[in-house]
Length: 519
Image (cartoon, one colour):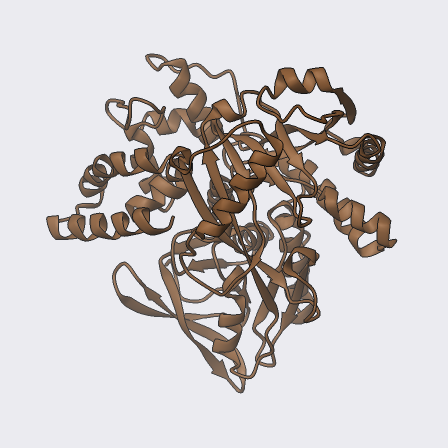
């Protein structure tokens, strides 16, 4: 770290913390963000990959005449528009279709999604329309044909969550922020009963450092209560945790670039079947859960998803066909005791303890920027800082500042070039130039050795799974191939980081345990 005294220290390197880091740093505050594991290792890399206002929230708002739900949708749509502009290399428009099996649901769904368009206003991504059943059969050949009336098409956004997290951090770093993964907060320092700093342990070097700052923001997602208890053992629990799993299947199950949205399964949940990174992504479940650093996929949740695929498709999917699966924990603001986690509004709450620890609880990826703006505004007001205007509404993130999607790189195949642009935006050429010679890490995919070197130098990679799981998402789409490239990644990291054989062995063992157990 450049020094041990900062204006603002943020604990937690996921979507919320990274958003706060870029907001604070771009306003001119001396900023540090620390994360005990890798950046986006938890929930922030395990989303449904949607940038959305929330169709089901709009339905709840209309049915219950709930202005809070309505405002949540409106805010989400506004932030969706900003995100698609500010990170255009990682975010794009997605066409979604809802299959309809009851004639009366067709006008109901169409009117509802047209209202979604209306609320979007000038930020809309396209007008909803009714899809004939013949078109449905053509675009989704495996969809269950019996009783199908047609479908309703609408538009939302899709994105690469883990890479967006890194882009946020790179942008924060550009504005002077220090970004440190594998740095765990072990305790707070107090002066006259108020927080004045914290102790941080570097988990790579096993060294401890004392950091001075009277402003510390707890943005640790599912671990927010744990950090709050570290500050105040008598603090009231503010979170309810919900687990959600996704499975990944071959693209043949979704041959089109359009996704499917099942608005209400038999138990009232929403199910998405989406095109993602050349595969078919299906999710998500919603179950109450307990805190875990590496949550495992429950076999019952897999059965739930496969069961519902069979309800809506004329096919039988063998578990062996699942290319990968993962589980994420949603940090939801605790509701009344009798409410189920699926009914909680995923809004956020900003609060502070008696000692001054600021915590932001809840939220979702789409509104990360707005949450960050509100948090920094809260800090400015609470600690009487010089008011500095938020800069992030139109701030292009690293990778999208000078984006040329038609970039050509000499001596590089179109597949690899396209891949690099999608992953790194206007840094694609820098990635390519990171290696003396370019080699694919696996013949079936476009990932190359230069990406590993670039990720170490520019993207905070410290361990092989930082790259395999989060910088590339390879383990999230094909766990078998992820295991196969592990040795190549280890060899590159050994050379770049001067690892001895003992360190390589330790990193290999740790990576294999996680790949075999839970991503």
